Length: 101
Image 1 (tube, rainbow, N blue to C red):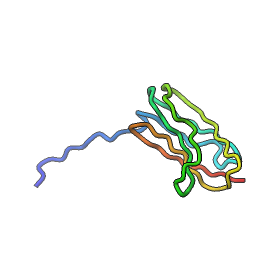
Image 2: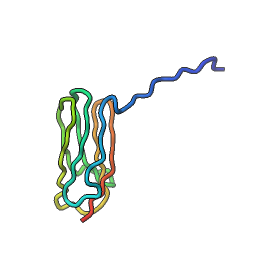
Image 3: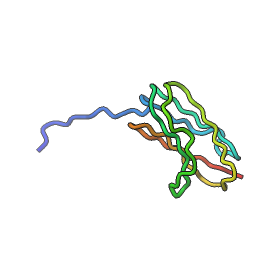
Image 4: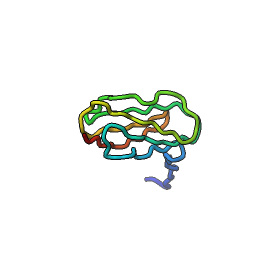
């Protein structure tokens, strides 16, 4: 039988980085994706479709801490739902985006 319960501190993703919702959302052709890094870290920012296929890699580099903005031009892609995924070696965040033609 357990005699005590120990609570681990949950990792707060805002301590490492924060991925904001794209603006505008829904968008037609281009949208801006913003994120904040607390410290310099290697990040990838990728766009995926509903089936999980990678559509684009917007960032694949080490970036300094601070606010960052990336504009994604969806070009000739069809209307639909897309996912924006920001990843470091430690954490991943995903946001849903709606492309409307």
